[in-house]
Amino acid sequence: MKRNYSAFAEDIPAYSGPKAARETHADLKQLSAIPGHIYTRPELQILPGQRQFSKMPWLVPMLELLPPTSISLLKEWGLSTTFVLAKNYNKLVHVWESVTAMVELWHPQTNSFIFPEFEATILLEELEIMLGLPRYQRGEESAISYTAEQINSWSILAYITTKKNDLYSMTSGMHVHLLPIAQWIISQCKRKTTNYTAIAKAAAICICGVILFPEADGAISFGNLSIIDSISEGMKIGQAVLGFLYAGLTSAALGGPFYGSVVALELWMGMHIQFRAVEDLTMECKTMLNHPLAYVGGRLHMSPRAWCKTAQVKGIHAWRQYLRSLTVADFDMRPRFMHGRTIHLPQHTGLALRLLGNGALVSYNPDRCHLQCGAARTVVPLLSHFPPIQERKRGDAQDERDMRSAVVH
Image (tube, rainbow, N blue to C red; front, side, top):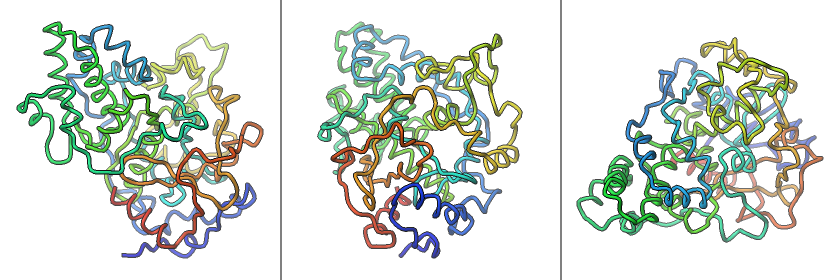
């Protein structure tokens, strides 16, 4: 069935600089014209109503038993920040009212948040730094991890255990359950086995499944299992994490379930919208106590002694009003952790970048967010580091397949 996103969406021309982005922004603000978008359905409950996301009572006890050698391997694979977030996961409080209000501003075709005066999105470079993931360097296209074929989960889990009963308990349908894997880790640690690499791989599945690829309570898909497994081989997973989050935001914006790294989304919101570093504050910000930034803010130049710009914004109605009237001055376009960082854009106008991830290519349009990227610190690469690179035409057969794949995903 052909997607009908109304005439304004089909007529958006290929990006051709800040001027074109400004000219098309007025049309993109008409989120209410997108069939099924939750912008027009404020009564729809797409996210959990409680302030706390479901906790994993097995997570922290399992992490506390990990041998030092396995922890060192996790750090060597670039999962130090993910490990810290997982160890404090049960302390985090997700404010779903703010997340819901943000999702209502997500445009499923441009994959960006549409504010009154500008567009913004979660940049790949931002995500890699916020989550401490190994960052892509030019010329490393072959090191990008993605899933394109059917996955044999048992071949991956067999490195952890070859017992059929364990394998049966760890998998069902197209998902892998994290609790049996955590129980296997705990049993190995209590027996003081020396299979440190297998323990580290199993722990990586658990912490990445909770922090980077949350899809269902205590379970991940086979495709994401393959991506997590590739970390130990030195593969870069930033594109997969961001692509999965983009797909989850699109699903939620169209009234479906929300999935993806809500921790990454809240880190991004905290750095750009909620908090601002102030040097002379003597009191700690109580709003940050249960925010992900309380545990990883140091490496992002954000301490608990910060000013919370949204401290008085309470409830879904207040968050909607605040975000739908957000100005350029209220959005921190250049957080300190991005100072001096290179942001890669398309090679030239008319080209679209796509994030490689689990199962599908996700459209990536950082060039539309010209204020956020900032010309002074942007480098256009000679060759795009997001393969494949191709001209994008909205409304053609390829665009229809991409959008339908994103919605189904």
